[in-house]
Length: 222
Image 1 (cartoon, helix red, strand yellow):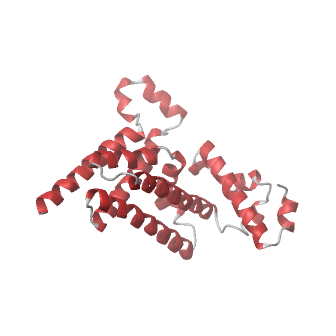
Image 2: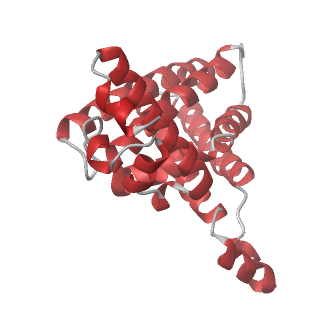
Image 3: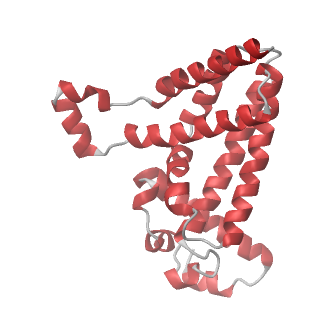
């Protein structure tokens, strides 16, 4: 789409189309290069806009990626809750596998989860952060309802579980994506094999141990 076309569009519908085009370009670039290496100039060029024109729709680069993080939360929550809702019962290990699997299947979301508290929430307006936090709170509550139904987790336990899962997913994804030079280093020295991380199996083990521990505590308390 040309810059001229962007300048001429005036309606709310056209504005929404532009915003979606910007988000789509940022999503594609981040998938290809990683969130950290995508600049506002890159995104503007991908949609045929000057950077100053793009700033009419998003206040900063970080706001663009925070919007994609919100999108990722909604999609992940819907997928996770859809799977859990179809289970009349489940063990901690089964729930852990579903959580880990649905996160590992979304590498861009995992990347965004790592970047959000470090960068994306720090260069946007307070209202943008408020909106993002309220959205995530709603999705966590939705997931928590399924965790309570299947495992008897309290609200606090469910919040901790989701925070552990998403925090670990972000960190593990960064470890699993070290870049070509580090990959060569790890492959060249067997002593560094521990640095090669697979997100899903490790996250599954961590969450299984965590959820099993919560279940034991609940049983002991009862």
